[in-house]
View 1 (cartoon, rainbow, N blue to C red):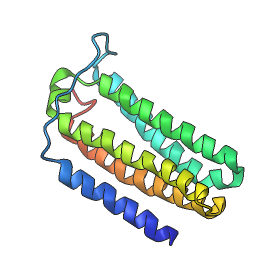
View 2 (cartoon, helix red, strand yellow):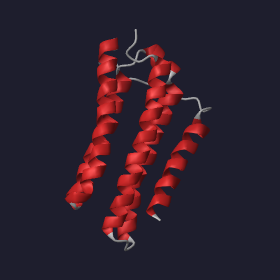
View 3 (cartoon, rainbow, N blue to C red):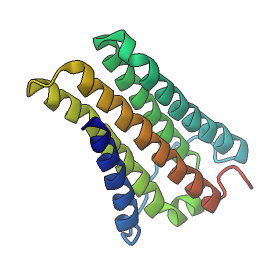
Length: 164
């Protein structure tokens, strides 16, 4: 049953990326943004990719940590989200405008992956044993973050992040 939930979550994420492609979104950036140099962009992009790798590694080790494993996964996921925000701040206005839809989809993709934490808490509250529910959480985070970083890589190539 837990493999079915992982597959369903992956399909929902893929369907979302396919469906949202036509939505137009305006990007707004803070006035005192970090530098938009290619080096700053490459560094920020590498940071996001590293955060995905660390999250995926944590999904493999967290089951051995009990409740502390959940907390560690949550921190790793929030670190990923913060790194992505920092990456977006390094984009030039042209990149931000050209990639507004893709960046919005990536934001919503993170929101969808984050719902796995709520699903885990609901499962445990409903009486499901924590260990299998945690296994599902780890699987959804691993698979969802893999799909998400693939989309990030396509977007970064299209926007030429770090290339100038």
